[in-house]
Length: 283
Image (cartoon, rainbow, N blue to C red; front, side):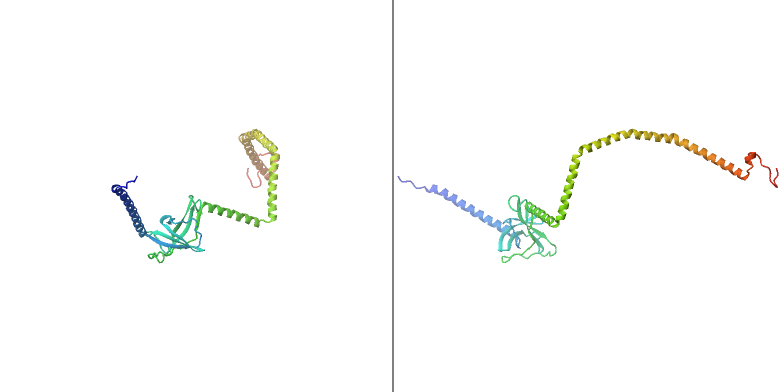
């Protein structure tokens, strides 16, 4: 049985769909090309060359100027066994001058993977504020480069490990056998002191308990001493002051009597009466 061929009416919708799909792809490509041309007109291309390793840096990695994203990495090429060429697409309104310095920087917990990324950091040095000329296909303006910088956790841990190992080696080389023996003796002495305290802990507790008991017995003695001091201040000291005053008056009287006896010894025989007038004296 012969199968009938498709009718022209059935072929017509299929061909129209194919043409529509082809036109859609064509318009999409044209739009993408136009957008790329428009975007490329807003960007300038610069080149950097570095002799440092650029592990983790990929195409479309961000380019930051003082922490603000201003472009993308366009191409990475190995020039020779010791240098790498990197093309950067940077917005034309970015303040890039001949003093701008580029640094390949890794940031995050690791230099690769989801926990970290590598980018190109731009910083401005005001020593040469002149702008670059327009870039051409023959050659791109060259940006100065600084040594690569890594600010991730694995590098920090490795650096700490290297520092610890260096310090250990330094201690091993600086400490001689005599110093090590002295340190060992000091440690052994401390251990003996600790063991002695541990063995005599009961005695130490007894001494502390006796000191507490003695301090409780000293309180009545201190209270009695305070009462004695108060009694001396209120009773004995006033009486002592009065006795001293009497002794002072008695001393004054005795001094007067001694003076009279010295002038007239007869006072001792006849008493302190009136003395006879001397020559030339009248009664």
